[in-house]
Length: 366
Image 1 (cartoon, rainbow, N blue to C red):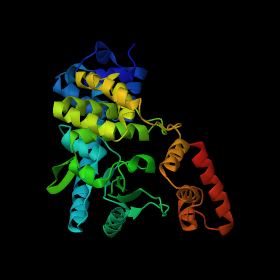
Image 2: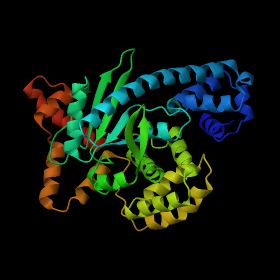
Image 3: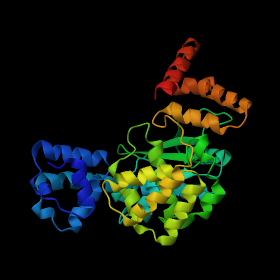
Image 4: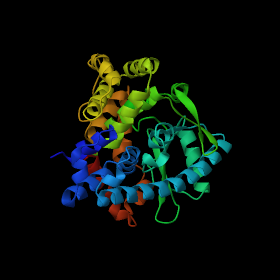
């Protein structure tokens, strides 16, 4: 019996396993639930329609995938209209930014944007001041900002949201660093990233997105960021890497390998591509793996990267001076009281110590 994930990966590769035509009962429910969790419902429906087999599949399977695809398409239309509005406002405000992750890939890598579901829109700005200016611009557009602790070292990301009606909340993540930590983010200055970007006409608004080599590298690092949540290897993210790997020419692969080695992340990229290859074959990726692995053996890998404390320790190591390390620890353990009140809903001052203990437990335990 083929598990749902392997069955879905086979469909995405263009195969039509016989088990697909006999799905029913609990196996069908598990297949549809897995497709939703892995972010591939609409994509599966698209691939099966392209293969011309929808009429020969179990009706409940087709209905389940079709319902998910229609819902994603409706939400995608609303999201794209809203994004075009906020992108235009940011451009008029003179703010430079890169469109990242799923939103960029949906418009450059997929036949239709709704085939690449995403929970939010990620924008990268040159620095913290630019990102904060963008937050102010979104507030004027009716967005609400999630509380973030302001300090010397952070935040590196701000979350804003707006209710678009019909139960759809539109989330926008505004980043001041390609990676939301000090130890990796400092390796990717915005000026270099712009050099590895390309133009995109997004609903009539001119924006910039990563080139395929940078998108592949960022996708590999995105896996690293999700180790803590246990979601590092979602099928849609592995499929992203596969599509990028198969679309890149030899020159782009050379750029990717050079970037990965120069930035000291070749080992992380090797791990991500190895997990991709478990479901999606790529001769180009297989040729790249030995080079990545060799470079990765010379890189420093922080311990505990599947837990929050591992990233905090790596951040500490990236700070050269003792005074900076002590300041970082102070900010981590004791963010401003105003933030703690907003973050934990504290109304009475005597509850503040409890909120700091709760935060400390979360930092050490995650």
